[in-house]
Image 1 (cartoon, helix red, strand yellow):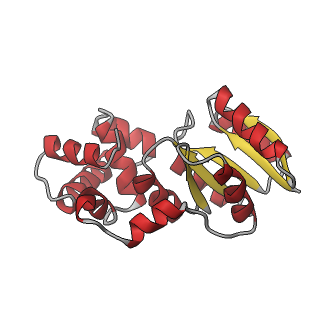
Image 2 (spheres, rainbow, N blue to C red):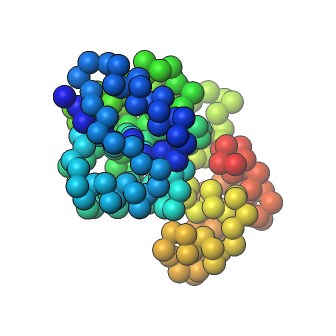
Image 3 (tube, helix red, strand yellow):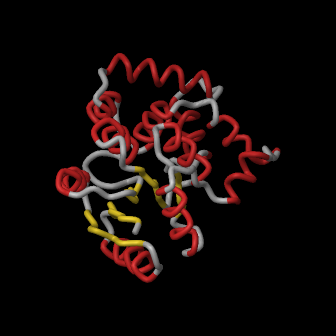
Length: 209
């Protein structure tokens, strides 16, 4: 029996995912939580095989939560899922230690196969994403730029794109302001821009907001 813990702040999503897994053989949803503090409290008393973690779960962003989980609960495998762009976030989350990424736009059947694959210690990405990563079409210029970015750079870019100042970004990611300025300069260089307006345009092209 594969024990699953669902972490998502949307009750309807939690209910839907729980129903899909409980209706399939070989799965048991042991609990569901709506915030990162609830998640870590639950991990103190339960031992899921797989945590399905929503990218934009409240309190701590999904990638920061993933990093903490990898440090404190290394045996728990994490499947990230989100309505955010698969092209951007799949690579970021896998680089940060997730065993897979599932878009909320994916077919329902993918939930079962993704959780099963991740529970076995295998990597999961959709066939569509695998094909897009393998074949870099001429229209995929923003995604090619994205591949140059580290996970932390994507986090910084997303927060900047959401309107946060350097100070707020530093607080949100537990960095100092000088480091955020360094990341911003690096982002501009990698994305081939020289001002914030163009940087935010690139963020928009990457579907970060």
